[in-house]
Image (cartoon, rainbow, N blue to C red):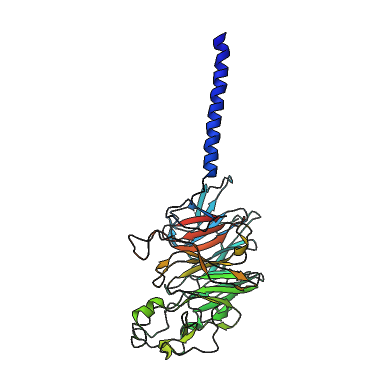
Length: 421
């Protein structure tokens, strides 16, 4: 009798002790500061955390996220013969449990808008019809929006954005870094490339089978704007633009190798219909804070550019290679980030000895409000001032999730990260 009574008492006491221990462990874990979950010790501001969503996805470029959290990412090269990958959390447990590759036209741009998934190849834009859940209805038969855009192999990414009036704005980058005559330091005058590249063209998003001739050159003198965004607060187009390359190779009397490392600026523009950002005739000098006449067209590093060209609204150090631009409209992040701009930088600055980061530009009333800052750093995984190994990750694409989270893709290892607050 004593044994039959004492056994359940002993069992209950054991359970109490066990539950107490578990409660203590859980409390201790909850009191610990959450550590970033990543492979390269990516640094984000206090209060934010970053986690790995998916990896080994190929040469990822831009992304878009559906209202139910599905991630669509474009690739610059085929992986397993497919260009786009859909990542899905089908049981809503916060983990991706489905990867579905599809399509055979690799590219950069991708966007959900007005019931369609729009995506680009290196020569055009096409779309897939979506259902009410923003899932593709016919994955095998996309509709062609526009094709036949210039693709010379260099700076050929056709990134794009859309406004609320069914217009689509497509970047056509220049394949000639400074519009020089081959093998010389002489600029082509006038630069004939501007007739079909070095700008942003406007097409109709709801009209099928357009050609280049159906488009309108919206802004010119834009060398290569991989990162573009439509700001719905200002109802205008913004673009971050890759600057040109070396100066000193043909013009050592005006420029040193150091000048070529630190000039020209990477630039952020607000573009209106008919604007001219000046390439290839001018470049923006972030130290002099003005447009300078390019040496190929008679410049000496001091002469200013034409008054007919616009100036950027913000400048960044040379060679950072801005590859995507996103205006944050969510409410998850603190107030300072609302309506500001995130920029994914794909390269590194010899001046800063830093690179491969996501930056933030605060905005107020549709204009930059204060200096830019590094938001998410150390994607490279190494000290760029004293490199000890290969670069690990290069930010390339940005997307906002339905709850206000920020997704970042990188194209070196095909990784996607999620940043939350």
